[in-house]
Length: 396
Image 1 (cartoon, rainbow, N blue to C red):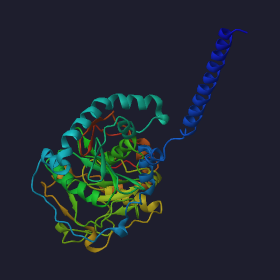
Image 2: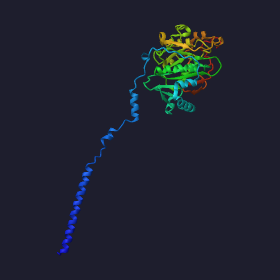
Image 3: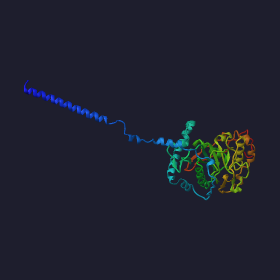
Image 4: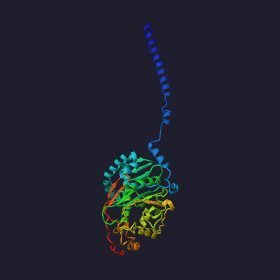
């Protein structure tokens, strides 16, 4: 073998050895590098994980305690403000900086209301309530630990409401009294931490006033908005004077008045069941609601009391100052406005009771308008056909 050949062979061996050394070094570096890089995320990343917003809301909802009942309320006297005011002023006073947002939400809800009502009628029992549909449109406004839906449906946020109350006000032409009433009743019901809605059941004609029939209409229409547990029928000129006079669904049927200023802080007779009365939904159905035949003033309250008593429902009433009310003065009723047949009608109330009430209630579709603080139900009620099985009183 020549010297030249030996040098070439030696060079090839050397190159091969150098390549092996380089390869071993590279593999050593790669193994060391890959071995020092963990694939699990850093511990700090785990520490930064937070519950989702949905989880937070759920926890808050579950942790809410029940809203207070009558025993938890203070025995606190109220000073009613009976000075004249306007709806615009009351809206601003009660809603403050949230007024504009509430007005905008109410306007949208009113524009959507006709289609909501049509849809509910088309699918009937499977339909969502009107308030539920409005809530799903994200039109609620939150402030002062309450949620307000267009139409005056107030839902407490700081506690869990167990029962829902509908305030139904029979109404005609008392536009001066309406803002005074709202200015007083809304803060009171919020102090009591109630979930409530206010419905103005308005008679849209000039025939004799039928307070009881308007109360029936208000009850039926209110249930289209929310499945209320009880209803309080409230005259618009009455103002409660104590926070402890609880408007929740306790101790019903209930007459909320133990005395009025105009009566020397007494009630005019023990069986009185008018002015402000409450009854549960189930109780209302057992008595077939109120009578529809009392056109003009007088008799419907005693008929109401008779129905309640005949079904064995025990009426309750607050004691002493807790049940005191003041009234907003209005003009005297003309003698022609009284129902001359009221005593005869009252005498035969039991005969009519099974077929005179919500069971035979008929009326034209009402005009419903949502306002920031209340829902207005304007209805053209008319006399219903007289049942031949009823005793016919004079003028009927």
